[in-house]
Length: 459
Image (tube, rainbow, N blue to C red; front, side):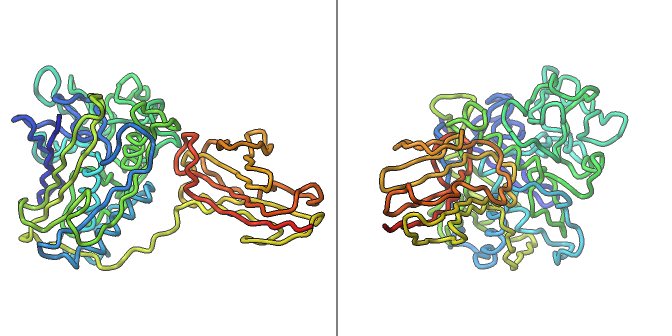
């Protein structure tokens, strides 16, 4: 079965969702298609996921047939880089000093939000697809429940979307961190063991699930912080980085069909700018098909699994009649990728030794902003007498099948000594020593980030 979803974006708010597979609209939640029609707990995955662990490379292009092509390239690349970093931030709502005229809308911020829809995420708040107006749209996403009306009461704090909201029989759609209920921070492990939709997992005293609204952020001691997927952006404002809720939601989907991090069905996501072309998984265009902007996706169930849906393609439309600001400054991306190193006698590339010379081998890891992400660690030695792997007992074992030395969070390793001795007992020949970490934890040798040193031992 194939589905079709269109998100309309209006000037005063950010994106509404209407599912056209049926006549009635389905309410948006954290994941696309969540609601009465397809199930409140349905998970939507990016293009290419089929239930097996892999890196999903999703291409993003700009249609060459419509206006503003050259102006779109830099802000779109910035938005792509932000999703690829997958780093939670605070204070991401910028209302002054951002060069955006008061009557213009920031294309980069809108594109960032739209791309989130195209990889499976939806609104944490009820948003305009609920049919509500004004601030009521900011209550946490839900269905109407048995009484077929939204029960809306902001509780004693008077802040919509907070933990003391009284929502009657409204059925929650928002995934939250168990026992924490704070969309502005998340645990290291994000999967069904740490996230839930069920009220039994709320902290004691909480009545409803919190969403990542900017007004709610103040209750957690934060200023001007809002989830990118939260519907609601104003002219003159930018929101160009992700909040914790955005990151956690995508990572929850990345835990795969079993929704357990560190298993073989986990995946990672890499958005790749394909240039000015319509030959891409996601295409953006100023074709004026929408009144402001709209994201249309098609999707289907994964192997008849009605709890999991995969997007087939995405198309994002923008209207030329609105006033847009196009940021033309390519953002300098602070390195978030892990940096691995193998050093032999202080040399990073290659050394030549005589048999019997002293050899010191060390490995180093700087996780950068990926610190805490779950990963597999591998140390491999290709020798004149076979392939060896360092096991979890820190012993080299001969094996043609990869052996993992460690699985867990990426952490700083300033210096770890693998070998420190004379080479008298090492056969002459060439040795290639490699240190690698993956961008997932599933005991599959991906060697996503790897460094090697070549050692030649002569008689």
